[in-house]
Length: 157
Image (cartoon, rainbow, N blue to C red; front, side, top):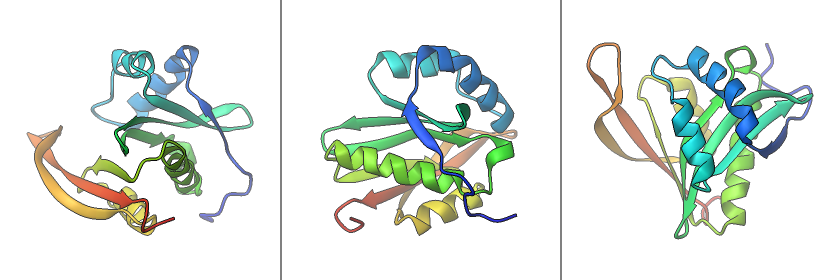
């Protein structure tokens, strides 16, 4: 399967009426999903919440917190059936541009050390290792650390 997109995705702000689709996708992709309340609160708090679409069908979503010259990617997900096709890369590139539009100088994210595919993508996009946050994520047995990564927007313009 090619990692190149055959069609271009579209992006739009997430709405309250998207939450049912987002929650359904979240429960398929993650063993410890965000709750409906997490997404609702993100929208109500004014976070930058987005959906990635293909032919009006939601294939992914993201929550980005923007403040004080920083962007913090809280959640980014591509549905399982859409992974490995370049949708994640296109969505991340879009989110980086959103952060730039809000004059963010840096963009942070956390990722599980076990998520090697995402870590490789983030590295290719210019994110660098910053630190390890111990026991950050719930796991099947205990907790899993988080790799904190940073994109310096000035270095990757």
